[in-house]
Image (cartoon, rainbow, N blue to C red):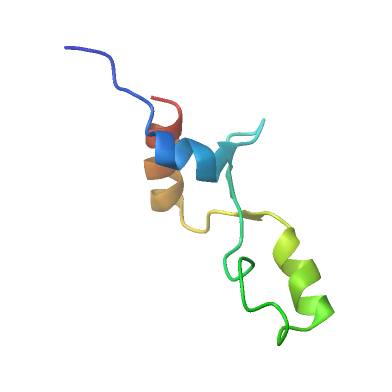
Length: 65
């Protein structure tokens, strides 16, 4: 069986922390920023964790293949 290849799209969007959690960037920060408040845009800068354990498992498989 050949090795699994890393999913390049997922690699650009997700990263795995030292403890094994999957970090993601938040959406809604690319355009139409004039109507969004400074507080909202500031909070969108922060990274978030992938919420469910099933999603984390799937993303890890794509990124660390």
